[in-house]
Amino acid sequence: MVAALLVTFLSRLVLVLLFFPFSAFDKAVNFKLATRQARQATASDTLARGLIVAGGVVEVVMSLGVLTGVADRFCAFVLAGYCMVTAVVWKRFWEQTDFRLRGPSAGREVFWDFLKNLAVAGGFLMIALGPDARSALHLVYEPFSSTNPYASFSAGMLR
Image 1 (cartoon, helix red, strand yellow):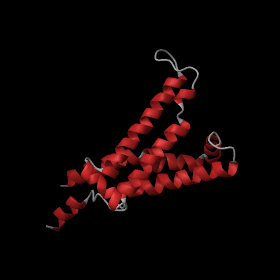
Image 2: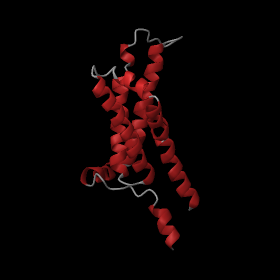
Image 3: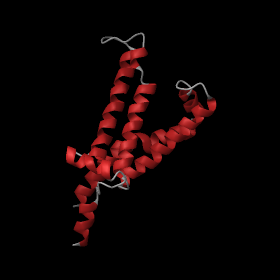
Image 4: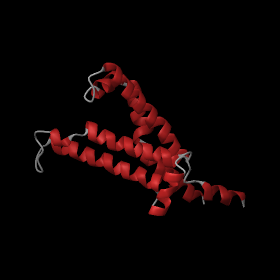
């Protein structure tokens, strides 16, 4: 029973670890650098700073939701969207002038980062939507419901 709990917790931790604590901490510690990067998507300093703050909040709050199981479907869905948006906005491999399949290529490196963002989004969508169409309806009809990832452990402890 403890092993199942540990596997569940660790699989969710590995999924959110990129965002919480690392990316959120990096945004806070290197706020000026993060803002400069956000300026690639907007011409406004104020909007760039707002994007960084909003991104940090999403990374912390939604990651904690996925990790704890509190409204984890919604939180995972938001993080999936976040991963897809950041892939399209900041991982623009199609704009690289040196995209090559062999040899050094900044374009290929950005392409792999783009695909990694999409893969992480897929992991979050598995939490948000579940493994089949029937379970996906939970997100539609009860968006703030939980997958109750630790319920079987709690029930087993009460017996």
